[in-house]
Length: 317
Image (cartoon, rainbow, N blue to C red; front, top):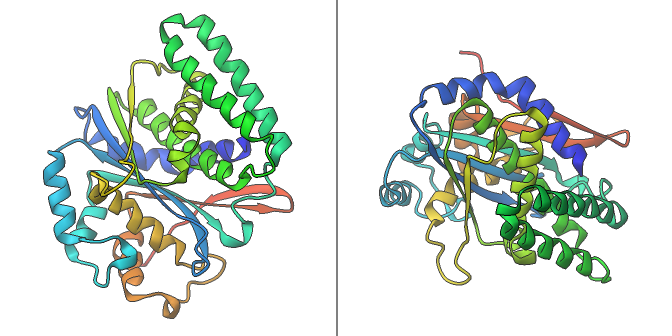
């Protein structure tokens, strides 16, 4: 699975860093951020599996942001019939930046990339790193002990025939993308706080919230590799309610609109716009095309090797 992390580093640094730095340079005084995530996965009516994250500046009261989104997008994309100008303006706003991974459905969420033995080796390596970190940084022992418990829980689950390898790949892919976004944010700006807001699903609920630990672990690995400070950034995971309405549902609606649209587009050939629903066409034309705040990365295997590249829609002006 580390191949995915490395591919993201290469693509983001090569093709997105300049544009992302331009985005950040407008807000040198902003120190707090939200990172909202949603996914469109294993939908047999879609062309792609998609992981989407939206980075949002903390520039207004949560209530005001929720009220605005609720007014212009009262339901998630699946239940939405008409795309309003207001939600397009929010998606295109200079206060947000979107990151997405597209994986063709035929790849079965990169099923051949990491089997149970390789997951076991990866988790064992991670355990060794965390054990060593606990010794080097005793002041953070509580965090490291919690992560070790979750790693042990996963390794125990892996001994069962019912172990869900597909879910584990989902957890790692989403964690990798989140870690890469935070890496870039910290590398090119000086944030103090970032809060990850996720929808309620198995990716974040399984293994006692291991996805958050996993994201933070790989963020530290990336930061150490690039030799920039990381411990001064406070990262929070806002756990969604177990039942009932998610308090942050409106914010999550933004990556939901992104993921749902990207999942509906056949990226293997020239897009057949006749196959798209009107709502997807509007988002594609008015938000994705010639976008200044979309980083979309398509990942697939080619001749047993992993390949990744930027996917952009460009129209002549």
